[in-house]
Length: 417
Image (cartoon, rainbow, N blue to C red):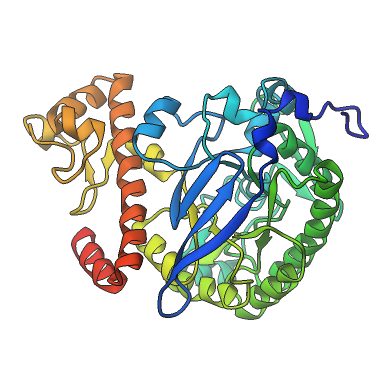
């Protein structure tokens, strides 16, 4: 199968077999007061108990650790990055391998993003140091001073996005249709419609312009997805936008809820000070019977807020990214193992953790590895941080079933922060 441009597409014969043709579904098992819930997502490659933390394997690998290690730390689902795999090794190569999960030896549920976040990171955010979450003070300063829209490597028009490769500077182009084709090739169970992730510093007028464009792209993504996948092998999620503005978030939720998506991502930019409220605006409108994924959020307080306001899935690169620099999560907050004070600390990274690292190694040893530039230090830290986040969300889920979510939230956050 080929695209109109002649690019090869994954076919059933090159996919991971008949197992991909099983149905996708979501059921709610227990509701909290308000919007929060625990449930079950069924995918072609297994079930996901929700809420769940999604481990990010950007380039079809979770940096520094093997897929067996990812399984052993309790992860249920892995997400790969469309933009990065498109550039290297190329989605055609991934298709020939049978999709990214087979290529990386992952046999559980899988997801890919749409590449929309790279529109933001290469475009409005390029060279600014701005993330998708801003504090109220950041926004006040931006509205007073403005921010530079000229220094960027991605350019948006109605049809799609033209961008430069971070590898060699070559020019490439994503459209909603091309994103669907690439994600089909990558072979995940759950994929996302192409969207424009805006800067949290953008004003209301631009947030609305980008949101309306995202809605038009959502319709085009759905159409191309249905052409590629008439048997609905892959579940397609729409992405809610609208920035920090209530009227836009609610409009986006209503518009996408009326479309035939299998689930929804809550994307775009947030004001850190009222992120939970913004998620609540959206999830009060989105269909209750479909899963919701909070994109790119992994701070413990934000996960609790997301669960409480009706989100089912969370992904973030932070656990492995910060571990590579020595930042380690513990029940009493994070520590930095690069600091000299850990040189003779022969206790586990987190005495309450059950991960492979904490059961076998000490802070002093991982400190030594990190200071000596040994890769194993980064691997051991990554295993622990991922297990910490996976176990945290598992415990949040159990607290919903046990009926003591609020008590668990108060106890955990009071100790962690």
